[in-house]
Length: 184
Picture 1: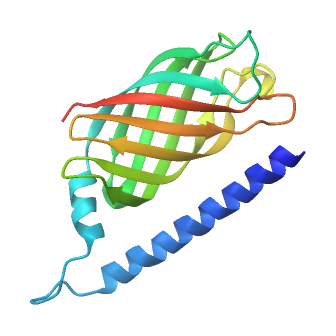
Picture 2 (picture 1 turned 45 degrees about the horizontal axis):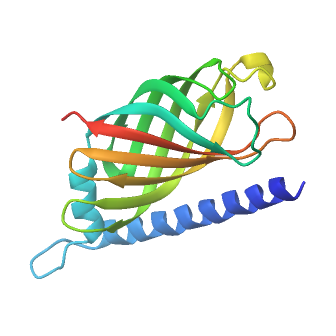
């Protein structure tokens, strides 16, 4: 029970942070970019981030409830398409930790970011969508997801880290690392 309350609090905090970031974006958009105005850092980052295509791997997972029955190497393949304003669409297929095939479709938003050098960006946000392949949830059918995400992206290579929460006795939580390669 305590874990679900912690997850709920984390989701609320993430949504509040995303709301604050949205307000900051709106303030930047309302600022004229006329002569003498300093362009918003967000405007430059958005222009650089939009319309990138990435090929993504499956996941390396670390479960919060350790059990030998879980696969840690969740082989798979997917795509990630970056849109303006730090939005992205993700879709793919992987072999999940229960050794079943899973497909996912996600929309993510990573408005919070910091530059870690000239070609390295760290972004934080959340992703919402659907996934299937987990027999104890909707008999293996598609079900909704909301997960926090942290992305580290270089000019050609990157990684996503997500946290999948525990859900009663149906889903054991995990941290999942996904690698990606930019193709355009």
